[in-house]
Length: 524
Ligand code: XMP
Image (cartoon, rainbow, N blue to C red; front, top):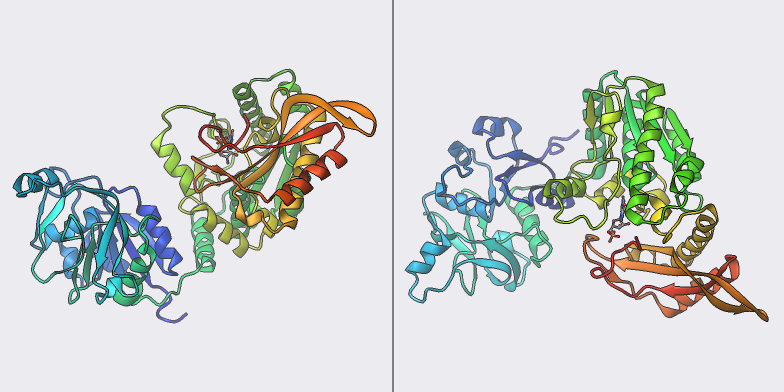
């Protein structure tokens, strides 16, 4: 190991919502980082020995009572700092500048113009400054601040401004302290990645020695240390997250891991067998529970979507409970929770549009001591990258999101074995044709659904009265809003022709051209 192998960046969290997004951007730049609370002392930071520190934003005002402040001694450690938003105001405040609230600034201003900035803002950079080298002189940044740096501290110069605000970024090249009022980590800031890259490479001297391979090794070490000689139980769904979690744990603790795969019979074509093929080899103890009959009998006659979800969620827990009872006490229950799940559950939802079933109800029914979530800090694409690093097959790693209740919520109305079989075949054809056309990577989720509609058709010389299959494909960043994908007509044509020719009892194929909102991604 050479001596630059251990470069680390410290992200000090002052309560902002983007701490893990900053971490992810730093990792994208090939630099290892950790997020710690702002209460970390100068002594602890010295021992951690980061090549640079990033102060996150936060909801406070630097003058407010009980606002978050760092240990003042950290400014004497000789470590470069990048302060973002509130982090920038902290730099100004602690190093002798003056920060005022927006209200005060407005009252003092001759024009009474507001100094608050929110949203996309045209910003002018001093491109000679190391932080902005390589960016254009004018571009768009994303701001979200009320407070305002009225006077910058001695030793600092201004290196970016906007039409409203002269102090958008400050720097003290000698001490290597930099502050920006905008958020370089969010996508709306056009050159945000370049600015963070500049901070890491030009200012902190990063060499880019971090990779997902290192992450894997580190995660394995940490799992081994935590688990010791105890046993771990994992509910494997076959989705990307639980599969990567299983592969990671299996590499870390081998024999001590048991994976339980509840096959509810609502998966896509061949999916259950694929999961079994991969994990029966990889996991020391792999149990597949074929529970199709059990799920279908519970779903018989049920048409209401939320009722279906509830039944599937509950049945899943019952099956898993029965299996885990056979295994007995385990010290740890592993879950493939990833960072976006953490944010979502933290925020809470205003209204339940659909009750998304994961394995949320599991913990109370399994006899275990603690939960481990080794993917908790990773974003989806990082999880996929880790999966590749662990040698999982590409079709598993790149699997598109698939709802927990599976095909049951893509069949409108009652779920039957016959309908499942029709839908599986239609869906497989759609996926084959999308792959064949080289379009798989260009859309975020695509599938066939079975409408509850039968209509008149003609085949040969005869009249038919058969099912209509609907095709759906969406393009989205976060699945909260989505646009329908403009699949080329030729591809839609091939899919439709093949479905009506190859799938019995289907005589009509529809393409859904609604965005979300007002529709949702799934049909139920
Ligand atoms: P909607 O239909 O709400 O879907 O626009 C947004 C995303 O969530 C997935 N989805 C689910 N995932 N259990 C899940 O685990 C569910 O009940 C469920 N319903 C929707 C959907 O596939 C899409 O990716």
